[in-house]
Each structure stands twice: as C-alpha cells, then as structure tokens.
Image 1: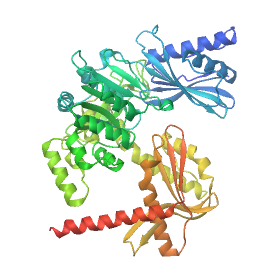
Image 2: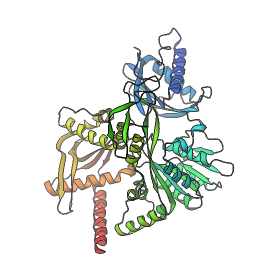
Image 3: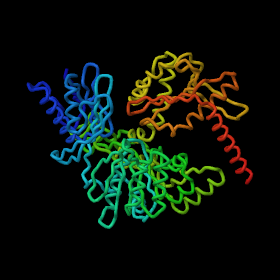
Image 4: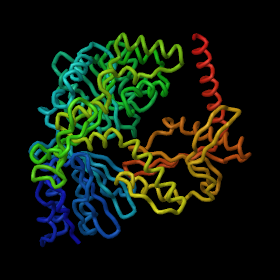
Length: 562
C-alpha cells in the first residue's frame, strides 16, 4: 500500500515518483530517502519521522510546529531505509537494540546545513527521526526573531554587558537555541573568544569554538564548562542547565567576569529563578548574577497570501482587534493558512530595582515572586499584540499560551472517564495522544478507592483534591497524573512526591488507611509515558513536615512585622 496525504500542502506530493518503480531494493531505498529529504527541505519541514508499524511504514513530517502523516509506504522498505540512514550518519548498522544518534552532512542540497539523526528500537522495527538543521547564517539575527523594539533593546543591552547570565526558557521546540545562536552572531568578532557547550551542536558557527557533550566518556556540561574557564573565554554558551553541577558552574563563570548564555526548562520567565533556587543555587547568587530572563514560544504565522479578514473583528484583549484569521483551506504557499513561525517573548530584566524588590520579599517571606516584576508584556500580552498586527491569529495565541493548562485538564478528564468505564469525551488531538500513550500504564491500576477525591487534615491544617487512590501493581497507592513535553529527571519532581505524601497523610487521618507507595504517571509529548514510584514514605513525611514548619514560621515572621 502506498498512501500520500493530499492535504499536506505547500509542495509537490512526496514519494509518489519513487514508489512503484522497477528498481532494486537498495536503489529504491536510496531514491526514496533522497526524494524525502529534498522535498522536505524545499517545503520547510523541520522533522521527518520514519515509523514502522504492524503493516506499513509511516512517514510523518512536522511543518510549522504541526506533525502530520504524509505517506504510508510498504513495510518491507523500512529495514533498507533505516540502514541507508545509518550508513550516511556513520552509525552502527548492525546495532538494532539500542538508540543511536548521529549527523548527516548534505552540503550538496542548497541551503541545507545538515541533518540530526536519532534512531530507537520499537515493537515493529527501528524508528528514525531526522531533524533538518536549515538555518543559514544570514537568518541568525536578533532582528528576525520576532521581538518588539523594546524587547530587542533589552536583549542587546544584556548581550553587550561584560559579564552576567542570560537565560532563555521555554518547552522543547520553542526556539530557545536559535535565540542563543542569534545572540552569539551579534557578538561574534575576532576580538571575542566565544565558546559553546552543546548536546548536540545544531548549527555550525564560523569563528566560534563549539564543543559537543559526550556523556558516554564523561564529557558532561559541567566538566566542559570548568575546562572552558581555563581557555580565556569572553562569552560562553551552555546549551542547557540540567542539574545543580551545571548551574553552579554557569553561575561561577558569570560571577568571574564572563558573559554566559544558557537555556532552562521553565514555564515562564518569572519561574526561572525559582527553578534554579530549587536546584540548590543560593538566591542571592542568582540575583547578583542573572541579568535577563526570557521566556519564549513559537506561534504559527498567518499566510500573507490567503489569510482571511474576520467577519466580526474580535477584541484581542489589547488596543485594537483581531483583524485576520487563517484560511483553513490554505493555498499553494502555505499549510492550512499558516506559513512559518514567529517568536513570542516575555522578558524579566534583573536590574538594581528588581534585585532590591526580590531581596526584600525573599528576606521577609522566605520566597520571592519574580513574575510581579514583568511590567512590559507577559507571554499572553505579547501574543495578543501580534494578533492585533495581523501576524498571528487569535486561535494561535490561545493555543500557545493555554496549551499546557488545557493539556493537563483534558488528561485528567480522560483518565477519570476511562477508569470509571465511561464514554470518553472529545478532546484536542494532543490531549488524545497523551491519553492513548498512557493507557498501558493505566491498566496497572485496580481496586479504585477514589478519583478526584477531596481530602483534608485537621492536624496539619492542609486540604486538597487527590487524583487517584487505588491499587497499583497490587499495592495501595496515591497516584498523580502529570503531562509534560518530555520525561523529567527524578530530582526535578521531588515536590510531586511531597504533595502525594500529603494526600497519604490526610487519608490516614480521615480513614485510618495507610498507602504502600506513591506513584506519578507522566504522559509526554515525545511519545513516552514514564512512571515514577516511591516506597520510602518516611523521607517524604519528613520533607512535608519541613515545608509546613517553614511555611508557618515565615508567615509568623511576616505578620509579626505588621
């Protein structure tokens, strides 16, 4: 069977010219791959997913952030196609049991830098994902990112400081690395020694020393960063701050006269400081080092050739209206009314006034709320401003600023209906996808005591609504359902277990029932569903007690000053 999606616009139909020809199996694989890549480059595809299923080889492609099935090919083609990809990426073609990563350089394709390759074993064979890294240096400018005039001025001002830490936050695929690359290009000249540590290196930058992390040989972010400090650097880019060791090294570098740029997984600019503080970084070190925090998302840009005027202009929440909407039929220039993407930014500059405010609230209450310092535009405001200009639709602004909340709510609703054997409600595709990949783990749940049940504790003075109390693999457990872009390291979710233990304490006080373990089921947009389990309840009872005692102490101190 050969299926080609006729609705995936903006290009010629992929693969039709290749499949069905009279040719050898090897030539067919080579020609299919050549056409697949060439067609994707011309159309502006960012990712190609080659996925063997039970009966077919599915090809899915991501255009403007949206993933769509574009073709179904004969399953027999899969092994030869994957082998060809491995040969080109210099991977081990004999190894089919373990994931592998590599790169393919395709300089002969006009405008293409290279491809990043990832293979993983699946039930029906090896799956490959090709990330197309097609960003000519001419496009790596801060002017092309989508910032407002004021936002770009703030970014440039932080870039040209002799030292400090610039953080860019956001989920996977939100354009953080491209923002950092654009900043490095603004700084790149022969008078500056610029080095990067990345995993992996996505774009090759002339004149910049780029180092790829290799955990297999012990070449970690923190180790490379410590070595770079002995290389007389002026500017250092750290691909991602993942742990306390890397965060500490980045802070130390910024404190010792270097400009450091990095990314951090955080929902907003306001929560980035809290995220680093939770890792174990001293709050006062943070505020004295960080110069600018930016959160960003990528919104699909309306196609200028076919965007439609709204019949009744919708108030977008800012002065002006929502004058345009996407044409769902699209045109030859776009995909369903959208063409390309534009950055939406939220900025938190840490100047002297911000530091003073943060220190006052931190010393008084034991915590600080940096989000209060975002006085220009938060992500929602910035998105609505682009709506008013006609660059993006109001629906797109809603999608990128409310996706996480909707995703989590939908997941809880679907899970509750499923466990109750009730008819499942209709939800957006991403929520349906997350639910489907979690069903296997949900089957481990039995003997349900309560779903979305209210609990309270008179002794502790706390209350809440627990997701699920049930047997998990035959043991009574507090079960919490979470969603994420990708799995989180264990150390990042300690507070989830503290919360679950709080529910366990409430249950024991109310019903004299003791749970055996704590379970976090996390469905991720990358296709994984991860289960985190904890049986050491004593540890989290102690942590819960510390949090409650600190809360009470802080509030007594605060109100004692009133």
